[in-house]
Length: 484
Ligand code: SF4
Image (cartoon, rainbow, N blue to C red; front, top):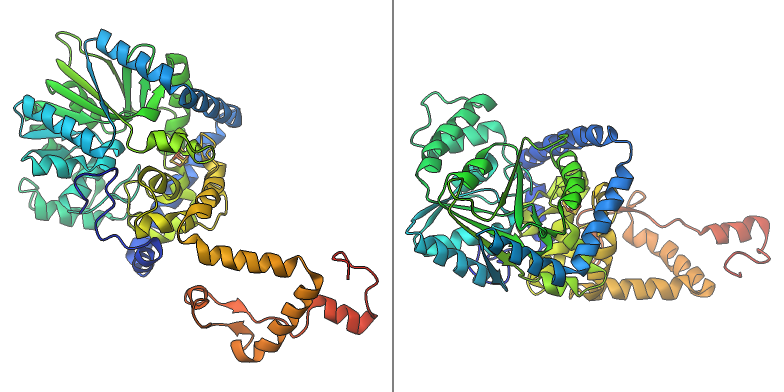
C-alpha cells in the first residue's frame, strides 16, 4: 500500500533496506525467479550491445546530450510547452506528486470517466496515481502484462522493466485464475495461454475506455512531441483509442531535437530488452483532428527533480532512461529483489534516485545509499554513464545512518596513518584471536559489530603480523614503506 499523496509516496510502514532484504533473502523461490530472469536478460543484453561497433561512443553521446539538456531545462521546457500548445495540446506543471494527482483526477472527472486505461508509467507509480484515482472513485486498469499481473495480485512492481519478475509462470496462472472471471477453466501456465488470456481480458477495456494515461520515455522540445517505446502493443492502444490522453512526464525526459532522440532509440532497446529496436515506438504531437485522442494533456512533473539538479554529484541520476541494466547486474538486487527498496525505483538506480527525490527522512530512504557493495557493475553497464557508486558514496556522507560508519573510518584512518598505532592494533588483534575466533574464523561479535557477523564471518587475525614476522626472522627492518 502506498500513501496517496506526497512528494513521492514511501510504501507505508516500509522498514529499512536491511530489514526488508532479510525477509527477501530467506525466500528461496524469489531468489530462484530473480536469478533465472536477470541472468537471461544479462546474457541477451551483452550480445545485443556486442553487435555495435562503437557502444562507448554512443554512450558518451547520450551522456553529453542529457547533461546539456539538464543544464538548459530553462530553455527546453518552455520550448516544449510552446510547441505542445501550438500542436493543439495542453501543458500543466506539477510541483509534486499531490499536485500531479490532483491535475490528472480533475481531467478524468472533466471527461466524465470512471475508468482509465494505463500504459506502464514509472512517473505515475512515483506519484501513487492509481491510489489517488481510487480515492476519487476512478479505477485505473494497467494494460502492460506484467503491470496487470502485479495489479491483479494486489502486489507491487519489483523491477523497472519486468515488474512481475518475482513471479514465475505458475504463480501468474494462479493469479489469473483467481482474479479474471473471463479466464478459461483449464488455463495452463504456458506463456501463449497466459498472454492470450490477458489479451482477451484487456480488449474490452481498451474499447470501452474514454481516457488513457501514460508516461513518456522522451519529450522532444523542437516539436512538442512525446515518445513511448514498448513491446506489447498495449501502449499503442492506450495512446490512440481513447478520446482523452493524459501523459505524466518527469521534467528530465525532455530532449532538444529529433537528432538527439536517434541516439536514445539506439541505446534504450539494446540496453533494456536486448532488442535492436523496440517493437512499438509511438510518437504524438498535440492533437490531430480525426486521428487519435482529441484532448491531449501533458503534466510536467518536478517532484524533487529541481532539488536533485541542484546537487552537483547527485544530478547525474536524472540522466536515467530507465533501461534496468543496472538492476540486472547488481548482486544486491539479485538477492534482495525489488520490494526491499521501498520505492517504484528498485536496484542501484533506486538506491540513488529515491533518497534524492523524497529525502532521507524515512528508515528505508536513509538506508538506501548503503544498499550496495560498490562493486561498480552498475556504472559499467549504464548506457548514460551514471556513476552510481560515486553518487552512493556522496549520499552516504549525508545520510543519518552514516555516523557509525564515519566513526569506524575515522578510527581506521587514525590507526593506518601511524606505524606505531598500526603495530599496537595488530598486536591487540593477535591477542584477541583466542577470545573472538573459533577454528580460525570470527563468527560472532558483540554489538554493534554483531551487525557485521550476523550475515558473514571473517578470518581470525593472524598470530603475528607480517612486520612482526619479518623482524623476528630477518632482524629489524631498516626503513619500511611506512617508515618503520
Ligand atoms: S541508471 Fe543507467 S543502467 Fe540503471 S536504469 Fe538508469 S539508465 Fe539504465
